[in-house]
Amino acid sequence: MTSPLSPAPGARFPNPKLPSPWTLSAFWFGTAFMWLLLLLILLPAEVIHFVGDANKGKYLGLLGGIGAVVALILPPIVGNYSDRVGKRLPLIKLGVGVNLAGLAVMGYAAALMDGLPGFWVYVVGFLLVQFGNNYATAPYSALVPEIVPTEQRGRYSGVMGMLQASGQLLGGAAALIIGLLKLPDVLSYLLIAAVLVISAAITLRGVPETQIKPNPEARAQRLSIAQLFAHQPFLWVFITRALFALGQYSVQPFLQFYAKDVLRQSNPGTATSILLLAIIAASIGTALIGGRVSDRIGRKPVIYVAGSLMAVMAIGLLFAPNFYVAVGIALMFGLGFGAFSSVDWALGSDAMPSSSSYARDMGIWHVAFVGPQLIEAPQGALLDWGNLQGGNLGYTLVFGIAAACFVLGVLLVRNVPETVRAAQGEVRA
Image (cartoon, rainbow, N blue to C red; front, side, top):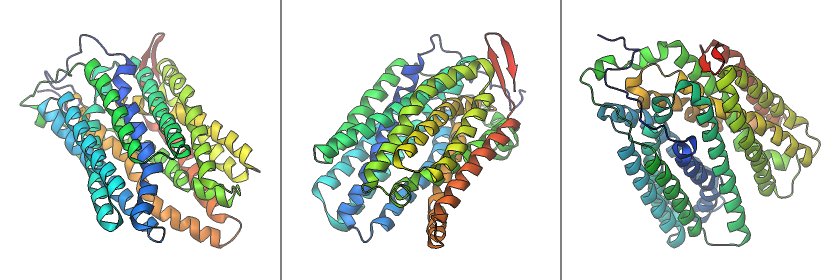
């Protein structure tokens, strides 16, 4: 009888040919492109189109809440099913198909419908997108820990981070061009669908089906949720990832308000786009470098530097005397964020305790990133309360919480046991 922390017999066989990191991570590019356009550009605009300015906050919050619930619940369930049936690629294909159907419904509602009836059709489309994308990415998330050797995961994670940032950058550029040319929004949905199909096709054609074989003993060998969190590497990686996500979502939703109230920008929307593009552009280079460095010296030293830089820059935004300095600070923050994102996936993959439940466990680990998105409402209330006291106190509180989360994440990541086999030998942190 094998230990529950041991690979299940016949559960994992090395693929005869390891796909390139660019092929393996191509689908993340399309997914990042889609979510930037949807969440930051299209959803806010379409909500105003359907319900007007007076109720935009309530209905946009409803859409965000629906998305967060689906992203919290679905990945562990689908991941568990993927582990049980021993299939990855067919589930990814099905998820992409549902995702595309959802984009079609959203585009139809945006182009041809108005008022609350149109909004509810749009919600149905958004639900299909959320369901399809999470259905696809749950088994997809298992591929790195499953087929990439430990000593190469930093490089693969770095390419993943770079492609995600590049997808976001291209999404922002596409939104800017569509807006300047005043093109119909339906073109955005068609463009998202095209990018998603191409990126998914690259991954699906270039990655062999992982040779997992259904195992009668797999259920007995699979860790329970309690056992999973009792596994110290997983527990601490989950906690530290949640802290970094809390820091990110303490600032990101309020950047447009910050640009208007603190930086005194007459066009806060454009100013916010520039700040976000600065962060994304700076993160691309360090995502590649950070992943490669982590394969040589270990994951945690990279996180120590990246998290500390993010904390300092979060506080620095409060003291930026003008918009240009704020852009420089955003660039520095992006350098730290890129390095962190490049190592984050590798560290999480290293912490997976059992090869018989990679997809389920990666889905549960993903909750650490999605769950903190629900902090937006209480953080928004804190921001409003603080600013009522005067002196932009709200921004000091919210940005200060972000910095504290980053610092705490840096301190606690020390608890994550780490072993990386590099070219010069075994490195333990």
